[in-house]
Figure (cartoon, rainbow, N blue to C red):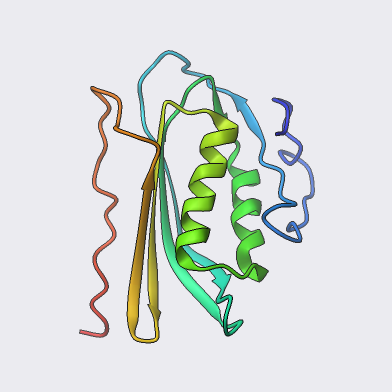
Length: 151
């Protein structure tokens, strides 16, 4: 895990070669002790099918209630971009992103929704959360409509 001095912020940063090589930066939570929700949406997320090597596309929504630190957004963007050349099933990619962030950042709560566009005519949605949301946390709907095709 990166220390609390951001590696990427304010620096030129190349896209990591793989998700495993990506370094996520964390900074102190400016509102530590307050219960609030942070949402990141990545509507153009891309990875590769592990069988065909063809690109897969998803709309990811990541919600978390910070603990003592928050994830720095540029490092998160680079981490997610590293999946562009990574082969993985939808379930592995979605849950893996959520678990890595939860393990490293240690938020009070985290959930991820992976709304994957059809592969073989079937859209696949994958959801993971660290446990029940803390009492009193406002958790809005992720706002991604079910896949309806062209009409």
